[in-house]
Image 1 (cartoon, rainbow, N blue to C red):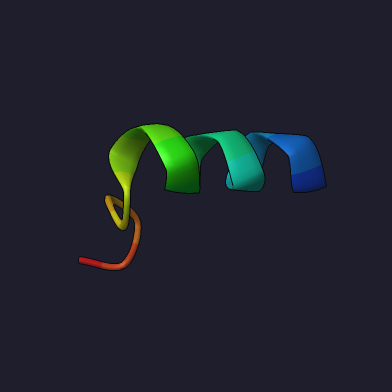
Image 2: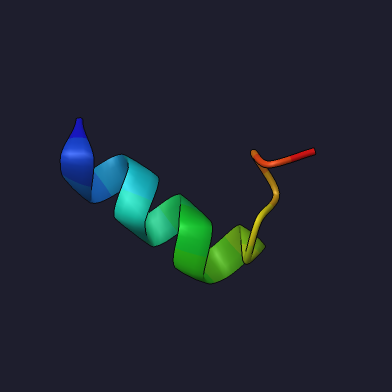
Length: 18
């Protein structure tokens, strides 16, 4: 699931970071 994390980081720009 590397693509999902990369896309989520680009779309959310740190959405998972919180």
